[in-house]
Length: 334
Image 1 (cartoon, rainbow, N blue to C red):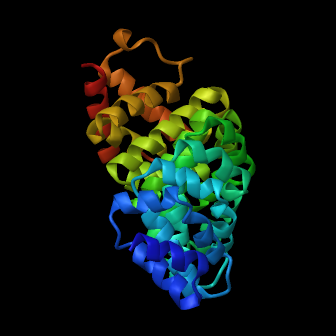
Image 2 (spheres, rainbow, N blue to C red; image 1 turned 180 degrees about the vertical axis):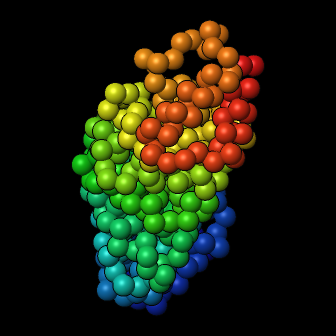
């Protein structure tokens, strides 16, 4: 069977090539690895550049089958020039080709040796554009959008290319997508995880995230409405922002109404979220007016926090918020 597949891919007519590509998925992993070593990848990549949708689809699934579970084959596929063809397919109008193309990018980007090469073809900018263009487009599945985010996440582990993430407009796009999406969705979880990674590695990205109109509001909403992990990532980003320039961002964060969600998170968040929310709460205190925690009664500290919320947010604090403050103070006192 291996010989037939090789012969048809290299020398067969259209139908024989498509049949051979489809047959690859039925072979064992050992057989696929042997075919990859014998040079079966180049004819499949040539099929990606054809105008024949059926041939392209067969080649895509054959490449996915070859890449699955083999770092060596993933590297061979990229070295053989697959990336330009895959990126071109992200611009096509055929859903059945776009989705496996994104899946292939995801699998290939998981290989450490591929990351720089993939980025060198402009993949980051193209994936950002893909997310911007297709997010509200129901013709593309949510899985394809998640795969695009996951591909960017894979690439972000290569710190050498972080500047490309910043210049691509990814920070702006992620914050926009988080703002318009359901905060408890898996997409927001993946997006905010990626955003946290980027701002933790690049001060330029952090300053862009902090200064973008509506960004702090989107993070506050995520703390209030997101999944437990989303809330944890959101509070960490706000903590980065506040630490980067407390004098500049403290008031902005408070005016966006962060206190109720932050206080709630300090009580019922994940272990990491509780720790970070308490740290952020202390940063948001007006240190010029507060003494140390040990020199104040809980009631005095509560009253000062309440006064600050009133002053910064310009609104009356509800009884439920007071209870949250009291719970937070009790936790901080432990």
